[in-house]
Amino acid sequence: MSAILYDTLGPIGRRRVAIGSAVAIAGLAVAGGLAVIRLVDAGQFQWQKWSPILNPADAQFATLWRFLAGGALHTLEAAAFAMAFSLAIGTVLASARVVAKPWYRWLLVSVIELLRGVPVVMAIFFASRVLPQVGLDLSLVWYLVIGLTAYNSVVIAEIIRAGVQALPRGQTEAAYAIGLTRGATLRLVLLPQAFRIMLPALIGQLVVVLKDTSLGAFIGYEELLRRGNIGVQNLHNPIQLYLLIAGLFIAMNLAVSRFATVVERRTSGDRRRLGGDVEAEVVAVEGQSAAAVGA
Image 1 (cartoon, rainbow, N blue to C red):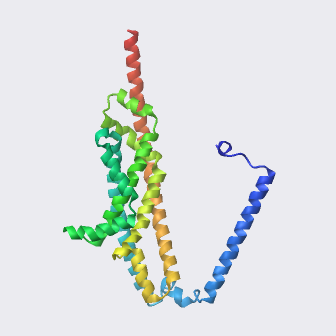
Image 2 (cartoon, helix red, strand yellow):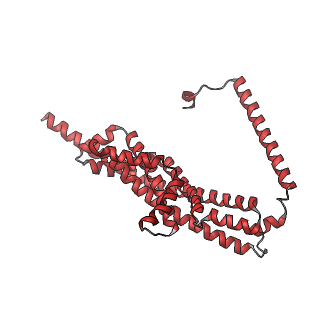
Image 3 (cartoon, rainbow, N blue to C red):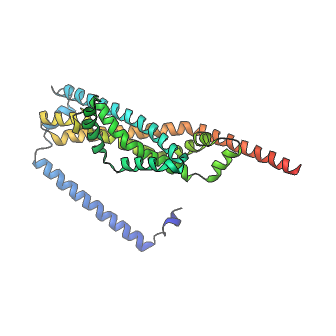
C-alpha cells in the first residue's frame, strides 16, 4: 500500500529525512531546555507550588483533589448525556436524510448545515441565555448538554451518512432481494456496517464532545476546568494546576477511546454473523431464481 501512495525513498532521500529529523529533534530539545531554564528562574519548580498536588501530607492536598474530583464528575456527567443524545439524534438525522424524499430533504439539509456552521460555544451561550427568556429554566448542566448536542449531533449525522454512502451498492440490492424494506435495510444492514467503518471518526467526535465540556466554564458550570480556575485563584500555581487538569482530560479521553474500541470488538462478531446471514439468504434466493428459470 505504501508503494502506491508514494515512491520509496532512495539513499539520498533517506539521508535527508534522517538529517531533517535530527535537526527537528535538536530544535525541540533546545526549546524545551530553554523553557525549563525559564521556569526554574521563575521559581515554578519550587516544592511549595507542587506540594498541594503531589504531597498527601500537605494540608490542602485532600481538599484540592476532592474539589477537582467533583469537577471531573461534572465533566463526565455532561459528556455522557451529550454523547448519548448526540449519537441518538445524529443517527435519526442521518437515517432521515438517507431516506428523505426530495420535496422535504432540503429542510433536513438546511437544519444540518445551519447547526454545523454555528460555533459550539455560541450554541452553548444561546441555550444558557435564550432558553430562560422563553420560560425554560434548567440547571447549567442541561444548557451545556443542549449546546453540545445541537452541534455534535449534526456532525455525527454527517459521519454516519458518509459511512452509509461508502458501502457497496450491492449491500442494499442484496437486502432488497431477500424482501427487506427500505427502513429494515437501513436498520439491519447499512447502519451497523456504517458505524463499524466510521468508528474512528465517531470516536474522534466523542472525544471532541468530552473536551468541549470545558466550555461550560464560560457559563458558570463547575466542571473540571472551572474548578481548576478556582483552585488557581486560591493556590496561585497556574502552571502546575493547568498541567494537572490537562493530564486528567487526556486520561479521560484515552478512557473514552479505549471503551469505544472494546465495544467495537465485542459487537464486530454480531455484525459478521449478520452479514453472513444476509449473504446466505441472498444465495438461497438466487438459487431459487435459477431453479425457476431452468424449470
